[in-house]
Image (cartoon, rainbow, N blue to C red):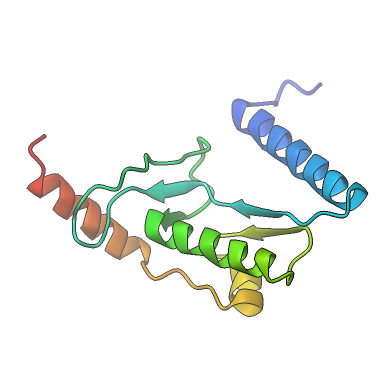
Length: 130
């Protein structure tokens, strides 16, 4: 193994292995499954109230941020599509640069941009008792 292996590389390798296992399993047993990739979800709502979700991070700043409400709406959308039998195994990336497939296939689009998420987080911080 290369000495350049980092914790981020190990995590990425593990995630890819799990995705591959899910794909093989769903095909072998004629099942449907969806993988939603997202790295960092802000846990602050537009109202400035904190969501019960904690921030999700894979330890790298290489990918974008998603608002937890946008992530939740993507989960609901793909679950509904699975129930209708519209999807087989599929991987969707919810990052800003990777969400085109989800936008095209299921008409999903993030509602909050990074500037709005920062503003929401700041408002929460200013209004919290911390």
